[in-house]
Image 1 (spheres, rainbow, N blue to C red):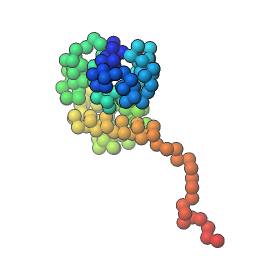
Image 2: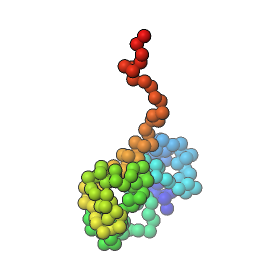
Image 3: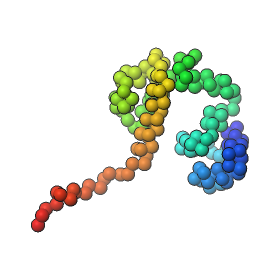
Image 4: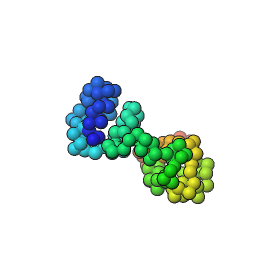
Length: 161
């Protein structure tokens, strides 16, 4: 149960729910909605929890053991038993970047992204880490980038009068 695990994390790391709520940038009442499981955590909450040191696979999964979770993420270690795939369409959506540009930024051919997605090729641990970091950076920069609709003239372009 997510709520129980979230409470346990709050007690262990912060001593009280209200301190975890403050660290997450929310009110204790908002956190209570998650601990009571009236709300399900979205990407932003999970991302904040991860930054605070919470083990996201543990907090989200009730039925799997640590070994089963490790098998689920075996592709990270390059030992995929289930010929897993990487969610390239999700990475493209999160990063708001075309596949050709993402491949270019990763220094791999665009066909490699398709092969990673289908499981016919496996990225190295370094490539996977680069993909993850790049998608997060592009996604966050797109969310926080200021609007650039203000078109001011360059000072040297003004008429001298």
